[in-house]
Amino acid sequence: MVGFDTSDDACVYRISGDLAMIQTVDFFPPMVDDPYLFGQIAACNALSDVYAMGGEPKLALNLLCVTSCLGKEVVGEILRGGADKALEAGCTISGGHTIEDPVPKYGLSVTGFAHPSEILRNTGARQGDVVVLTKPLGTGILLTALKADFIEMEQCREMFALMATLNAAAAQAARGLAVHACTDITGFGLLGHLYEMASGGDVTIRIQAGRLPLLPHAQEMAAMGMVPGGAYRNLEYVKPYLAVSPQVSRELLDIAGDPQTSGGLCFALPEEDARRLVQRLARRNIPAWVVGDVTAASSSVLELMT
Amino acid sequence: MKEIDARGLSCPQPVILLKQALADQPQTCKIWVDHPTARENTLRFAAHAGYKADILEQGGDVCLTLSKK
Image (cartoon, rainbow over all chains, first blue to last red; front, side, top):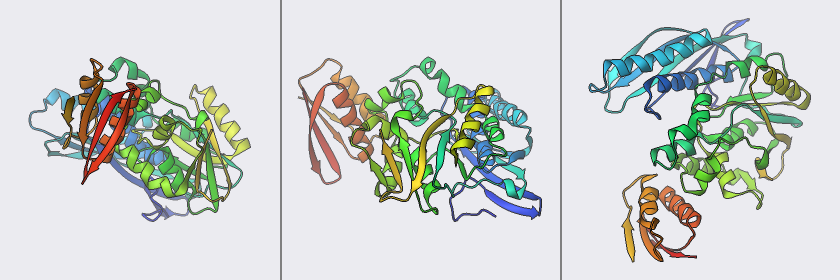
């Protein structure tokens, strides 16, 4: 049902008329010293692709790369972090594979299921939709700042809590609403993922920079040159398709291109449905932000305006 | 003039070196970088710290001459 061609979050295979299987894999090196937290973040990030496709994760396998000098305890804590998030997601980790590697890495291969009619794609935003985002932006910038000691771990508490938060509740809240497109915001940054969302449809996505939810200190750290290479590459990639108002600050543009780790879900859906989505999420104490809208195609696929 | 050679270093290393070099607020400072991310990020840090930059490109290398605004 969904393959390589649209760079979607996962592949989808129709097993029968009422069952589709979603398959995805994601793993990466640690971005934080705490092994338990790293395990949680890696698992949330991997499980997120299933939620972004409209499914429920059911089975997962660990992928683990460790150096021989990494203690048993540390490895155990990484796996415990992953297992706890899988349990919270109602997903069974049924095995996995470990290899030796000079750079440790952890992640999951995840299998999820959905009714074929409930599959959400990353393309297909329609004119009249609004764009809703469920986590604030700036993880790439803050992680760079942490690496450079420009910021303290303590100042990034909110970011780590959000990175270790499943997108399950956000996905469940969207059930039954007229979602035309959905994706999770990860390595390509908000603009990279929105470019995919707009492509295929004859539409332009307009983002209001002033409405973007930002992690604390992200703007300040961007201004200090803590912008990861991935953000520049993402901005370079979308440049031919992007119109930026001159009033939009350089820092907000950086943040709109910033690669996210375990980022939020991003939905394109009609305004009335978006209002209900935000209300449903508010009842679960999950913030969500309307950051833009979808219009008839103009000269640019994406617009970042004030 | 202080001179930093940050060529061959990946971010955020060049910005860390620049921050150290500008800590005692010299009137001028020169930094060499060799990739776009380092160039952009050192320019951002310099502007944030109150310096303006003259940019000289030499092959793949970039030399930023910073002076206090």
